[in-house]
Length: 408
Image (cartoon, rainbow, N blue to C red; front, side):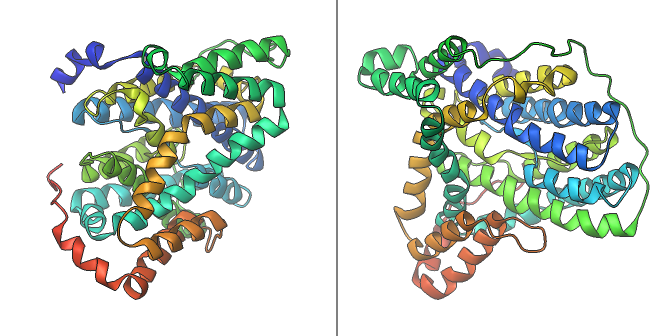
């Protein structure tokens, strides 16, 4: 770890900083709105909401720094977005302290799964194309959102896309100055010219997080624990693991699971919900602009630092999603996701398990939700089941997969 810290200045580049910034923008806008909506559903006080925001950014930011510097991999931690939706529904019927009790049990279960190595063994037998089919389905809306954003705001969102394309026409310039960074600067300029930036009235103050004591309620536990565990382990973390594997890394599955559990327990004490590996954000960190594989961890370091700072200024954070048009964030995310989505689709349909990968992709895109569990989980389950019917011959190749170090 110390060697990776020493080598950070050499690994950090303009491209990796940009990808870290884009990944942070993802987590600091739309997902935060979902948390604010959940807090409103539960009629939480301002202090409780601020502490929640502090937990879901500062703790995952610290986990991102820890894992990235320890394993030299672009691992990005955040919070469960589907989990925030589920928590909002639960807060309408249960007290904040009862929900916190469910958080702590959830974190303990995830931690146990990490120390037993169950998740690692499961990931080694799952067909990678099926996993990447699920990931492609998760990432597809970001790509589609790019053109929907341009249609919504042709000038504000169309100019940055045009700048991005122009920079790609000059490879020499693109190597020195990443096209996505050029698109960000063009976005800032067009937003100012169009007067669509609204920071007036934002409170400038540091967060004052609080520790909360849990209460134990069977209804809250039954409604939250299993869905939250599945969301973290089988959806969020599974996406991040699949993305890292597709980039040639051997992700530390057990460590990622253990620290998701530890982070979730710490989050719970602050009144915040589960910590997890952020699939789309990790995908952004692995973009080609981040440099060579052994340099891309620097993008995660940028994400971690920005997340911590963002959480420390939680009162200001609550106003950020309202300062910039959401369509603009969708546009930037879509541009940044182009190369990532291309690689994900290639991994899904470029080898074996094509039919079952398609099942996984289509189920995920469908948005179907059963038992409060989102479509990525059912896409993975459906794809694996389909593989034993439609791609039986391809299962023989799984035995040739390189072993993963389970001691991590």
